[in-house]
Image (tube, rainbow over all chains, first blue to last red; front, side, top):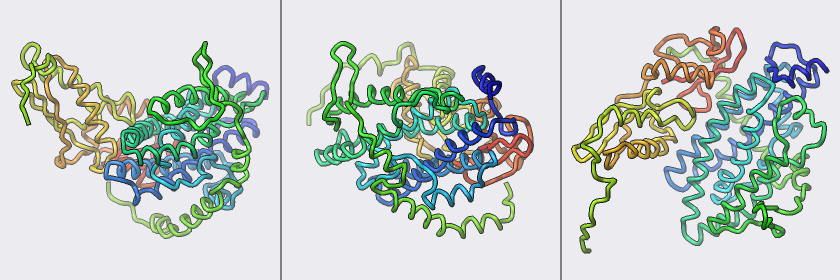
Length: 300
Length: 168
């Protein structure tokens, strides 16, 4: 293990057929599996909004995001399955049985279009910041290369999110109220997506799977989004919010991690419905997979 | 409604005669695909034609990879902004054509190289069998669709890399 860690510290990249300690393989696999699950669950949420989206322009962006997220899940499940820990079928069975994890934000329900705007603007930015920090220095080659493509597309989603946000911020009082309500519901889950402060000896950091501590990434997000939301005239729902008069840095005050812990134990406000809908969806679409497995090669 | 004749702003006046085609194209070339930063839309074959009016008006025709592409408004916006920086350019319009259809043989050699090197994305041209951008190995198709309508997904039979293939 010492040699392996020295190899990683020197910037070594591990490929799928390389020898690697089992603990490393497990850590990388769990990380990719959770990412894949999150893309799938996120894609299904986005999909729910296709028929309800206001206007053709937003509908195109929702359609594209749905396909992107499901496509990212597809690529990530391929990379994860290739590590030889679980097959894709086993990963999906675990997801639908509530035995594996996905990001906290997908344990909440998006009730209004305002929620979707808040997700696209705040949550996507948080997810992108986390992924960028992994991409920067990830020691597992296949994941790093897939991430490069995913991060480029998530950057495009950010622009779509900004577009949604600008439209609602410049809208009527009712639209602005809708967004403020969504902000009140989504600000804290988005912030908690980064997780609690990284523990000393976090293997994800030690093995160069992640390149930045959770609290550093979270703080970067706070410093960007608190002033941005305020500049659009919205209220950041943090009663203890303060700004350091010297440095200008924002502090959201103490963070209650209980909601995050509940989502990790599948006890979030919408966890049960989300998981069962995803499982139903998988069962209902079995005929498509069967048909594709039977298909004759299509001429190019 | 009253008509006010404001003096023309310096922006809308051709600086030194009409802009030349090469400078406009060079500006178009600076616009990257929003999903592939570093890969120009010119190299992806989205450009079809342009005309320059005597007053510096530039009309551009572009071809989408597929008509439902969600990046069209964004690309058009980026192209207008880039072309407006060319001296002598007045108004800029961008139209998305329904014909000709975009095909992968519109992607330039430089575009293919950038997609392969930067994003490990292969390009399927006509009936050709694309190779793995990493190792040159044979690709096994895994699904017709990837994260976008214009891409399918394959696995390299040699290095086992997960590869997206750009297709028409």
